[in-house]
Length: 204
Image (tube, rainbow, N blue to C red; front, side, top):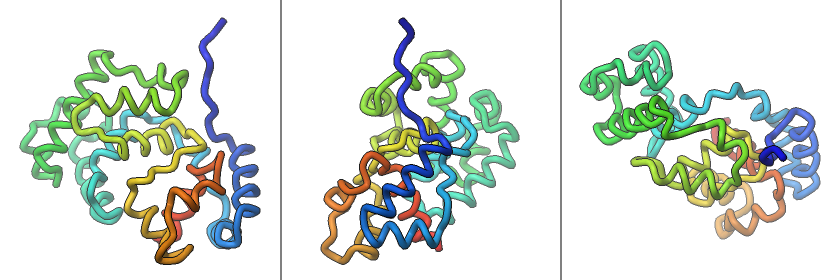
């Protein structure tokens, strides 16, 4: 018997998610109408790039993270483990990465290169098992692992309670006293899609 493969967002599942969210509350209905179809299911599967980008984005605004990511992309040419390992540490720093983030991405690169970290095997593991493995890597905390679940593995029901953007959007949309965890119960089992709409609201 083959290993179980956990649910991922497909185009069909995304449409079902949007309908479910629109029925969950007036706020979500408005967000779905305003921002249209959620594109998470269309994302190309690039696990290393997704995780490295999440590390770059830690504790930064979206604008600042995008700027640094572009500089790093210009530098490494190939957003792969080998691409990073061929670049001097000081060059990564000059591109805008902090010393800590440069070390974290280089350590991640080594683990992927040496096959100590196997992204494909994560397709057959639960969200919490994936988080447990990733948070054992230096520089990867729960938030970074959750971003990988959403944008890398395209898991449909991830709600990152520690995400400052989601917390802010929840207060803006549902009231100053609104709690992300409580409000998010109505979004299950499509919290990842709901999160995309909240982030999109902030971007807009």
